[in-house]
Image (cartoon, rainbow, N blue to C red):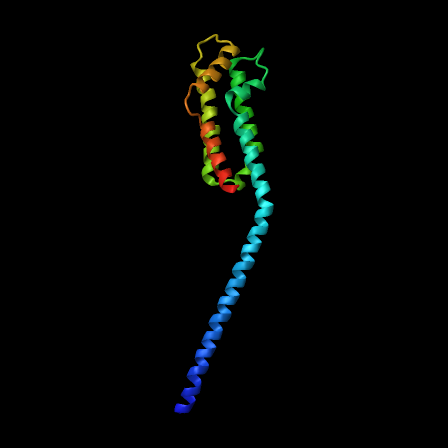
Amino acid sequence: MAEIIGYTIPALIVLLCTWLVMYKFYKNENDKRNFELKRASQKEISPIRLRAYERLTLVLERTQPEHLLLNVDISGMTVLQIQQLLLRTIRMEFDHNLSQQIYVSPELWDKIILARDEVASFISTMAMKLPEGSTPMDYAQLLITAYRNNGVTPHQEALAALKEEVATLI
């Protein structure tokens, strides 16, 4: 009986050591394979993500009041018509780029949505602040000057967050 135990214990120790070595080897191989797959997918995803950041930068630039007004012919329009056109343009810009949110962090997307909502609210508020009988040019001028003098705008905050996130990607 002692002889059997004398052979069994070393055999079990060898078996356990063999199992540990094989387990670590397979785990290491699996980790290496996962790393290679992740690296390969990053090669494909990174350019797509960079394009998403570019598109969102364009959205933020295009939805600032002064850029919105540059793309609109306000002659012959009322203040209410201009306000509605600007709000529709903002909505269309964002609707066209909704899919980009899957490539950016939720925090950045929230800042971009906040910028959209803030500029839409700003456009509506400025239209209400105009005195009766104001011209479309008065409205345009009020939008541009008030937005510039508003301190750090939500667009600037979103652009800063976007650039920061891109810097971590590159």
